[in-house]
Image 1 (cartoon, protein in one colour):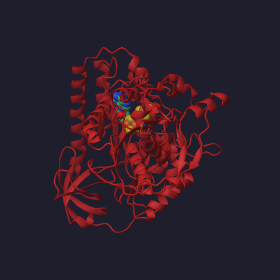
Image 2 (cartoon, protein in one colour):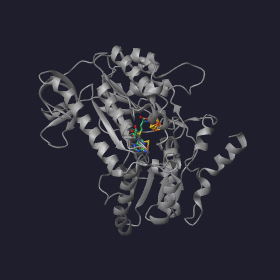
Image 3 (cartoon, helix red, strand yellow):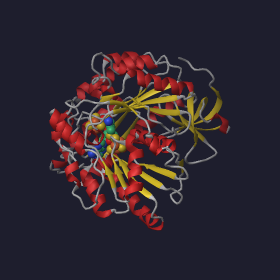
Image 4 (cartoon, protein in one colour):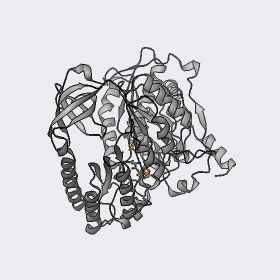
Length: 506
Ligand code: SAH
Ligand code: SF4
Ligand code: F3S
């Protein structure tokens, strides 16, 4: 894109005031490979967030509610939006009946994620009729898709606001516009995204915190919508990340998870110095916080220096989530994952050599267009060969605008479902196998809170990300405790509380 085109694009971005009868398609770039080719040619702006004085107090006497549908990144965006709402004077509520603003923070990764949002919009419609002053908004990844926005415009007139993932920091202006205009406010930018620092955040609980290290994704796996909904890869500056982690450590947070769609590409876009995820982890290692994780890793960019740093352990945990997607080299090629089965296995071997007690987990897609039985079996054999301890498994879901969605597909849905079941049986088997040896051992658990299934039981995770249930006084919630494992189930451990861990070992 040249400068002139870029300026035109900039001018077209926020489109206000809006009339619902207008043709909005002019303002979008539908997901397309053309966008991919433009990557890297647009400058990323680094800006500081601030709230315009005219909006202060906008939320006094009003309540907000945000429903979150997506991944950790989406959850963290909700924390940022909650921070903005509270800075404006709004109060949080969990009750749809007393909310003055309801936002649905959506996910576009698979069709069922989108269907849940459309279902929820249907549920909320009567509320809107009862309370016409209620503002109902749709934000997150679905808002970045032209087809979704058009569908909302056509079918869901209960929606007052639609905004995307690149302009969360504009929430005060967007809300103001919605109060003033009473028309549907659509503020979706198809640009590649900036980095906005200093955003307020309301973190959920004082124990675990998410910290973005980068935004966007440039990998363009052929099945995936994320590069289109989240824009191009752009890294936060190391000093901003380190500062945020330091502050969280000072506030007593026990675990930090660094977030990015492809954290191993961290730093590649930072000009003028050689700095990657390994360098960042090496610096964070010295901060007084008991556990640091990161998600999600891409096998392609996982370098030796990072492995060396992770092997130093301390507060860097022995768990790596390393999505493989498929065990078949020919399938990986069609998925555009940019590694082979052999390369993946080499990487795993290197990691295991450096960190012998590492727990590896993964993501797998079954039923990609034209996946053969042999290709699927290669996935099963890779799973066994690596000995993954857990996996998120999915049936391929075509996403409009992605290259895979245009491929013809000869795999019937019942075959896809059957493959998923067969894979899940292996996942269960290997999870059980990984958990059994814990019986009789004492493990360190960071206590999240009451178990979802039983309020009398507490639950938390080990450094290797094993779920442990045990009974103990509620005061230990948010602390690290030692638990003696008494029993291993397929996906979790049961144990007896031993004692609270007092010191931080860094
Ligand atoms: N950035 C991460 C994953 C983000 S999406 C990574 O590359 O690993 C989380 C998972 O959803 C992916 O790992 C993949 O397994 C799955 N996924 C993504 N697109 C999908 C689609 N169209 N259908 C089914 N599963 C999909
Ligand atoms: Fe999607 Fe992850 Fe591939 Fe990026 S690396 S395109 S987020 S699956
Ligand atoms: Fe979903 Fe967007 Fe995350 S599509 S998985 S919420 S990045």
